[in-house]
Image 1 (cartoon, helix red, strand yellow):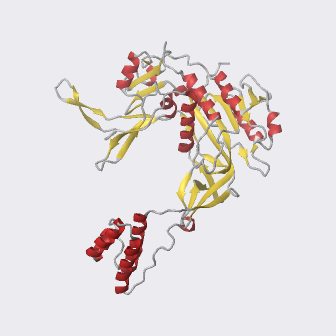
Image 2: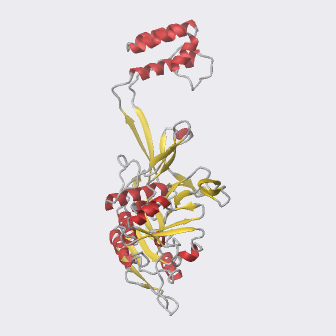
Length: 466
């Protein structure tokens, strides 16, 4: 039987999110307008809290850099619109020297992307300038990730109500608030949001506006109120000024009490390999040439299988890191999973401190890119449950594509059916093997041990250029 080569690493994990708020969606609507809420979606029965993949992948990127000490690919502004606002950002766009770019990808879009533009430096035999297509620099992330979804669609909500107690106030701000109250009482005009309170006051009486401003400059709010009350009386209206400028400020935060599950899949075959084909390129040619001169990169366009895939270089080039490039593709993948096992991050950690490192982590190497370990957990009153029957069915169905043991990392005392899960250790599936199906071993350990052990099964890149 031909030995099958690992091309992907897939897995799933579970986070214990007791009284947590890890990804916010801003303020609620209607009656909840003063409530800070987490991100949720509807599943047909109710609201389900979740953490976006963008959010938790950022946690992973940060943890990855902190754990390895490798250089970070910082995002920076590279374009501005006519008003002077940033409209383009990009990281270093260098996946060779910055492993973070290699794993998580990047994009720098170009104006008129895909359209033909004149190439002033290149002339045809007739002396006319040729045209080339404008290309963006883009590397789709080899690391695919789902959102982190709550196991609970009901009974997860909690609300934290509190107050900010104040002893001081800002006089100019209070003065503006008092003038705003005055204007809302005496002015028949619709509020013009483009104008300040002072500009709107001047429209009623510019002399009064100047006197009121002088009271603000003198920090004399009593005279300001008397002046405004006098004008209000003349107009036959009443103004209710602020009685207690230091009243406590209430705030409410809706948090969740649940467990969050997610899936991921790393395309290991793409690490250290960069395709410049068609209208989009993964590595700028100027950077590629410099990296080739430094001995970190090689042009493998005319080597198989790249020669066939690139039509012998007619549709572009393919580059691959060399043995001199550090860290290697294998080291990058190993460190990624180690970082995942000690994951940290999340919103409102000062208020709702949460350990987001996985309490369950399942990993395996595959010959395909299917994120097969999907929805393997369910909730119960005693704690989360690993659906063993579903897991075994997946392993049986994909046994001819799973090329490593299935590593199950669990934190002791977390899973409700922990004792049953531990009985899976060293179990071989399918039980009855034949010559067309290879067996898959299951190994049970801690999450950190699983992340470390998967490295032993990740192959060295045999095709790396020497």
